[in-house]
Image (cartoon, rainbow, N blue to C red):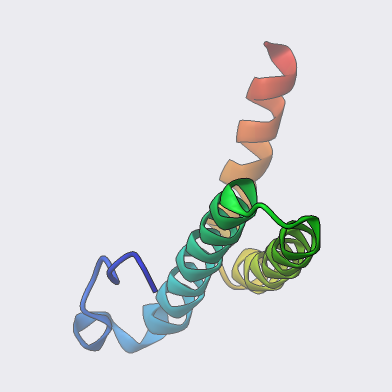
Amino acid sequence: MLSEIPIDLEKVDKEEQDKEILRVGIIAELDAVNLYEQLAAMAEREEIKRVLLDIAREEKTHMGEFQALLLKADEEQATELEHGKREVEEL
């Protein structure tokens, strides 16, 4: 993972640990998406670009899986996500 885990998971309360683990998973997947898309932009061969972009899409799916689990585990996260969507729509 390119990013470092922003917190010491061992110091997190047990009831919060799963949510933090899911957030770390999301960070890792975002890093992977960024890496593969940047590499694809740099690649010269079209076949390599296509494969890298396909892998980036898969990482986005993984990110969605982590997010779905997080939204089930953290009601406040789900509520604030909806608030954020509405704010963007209002703009």
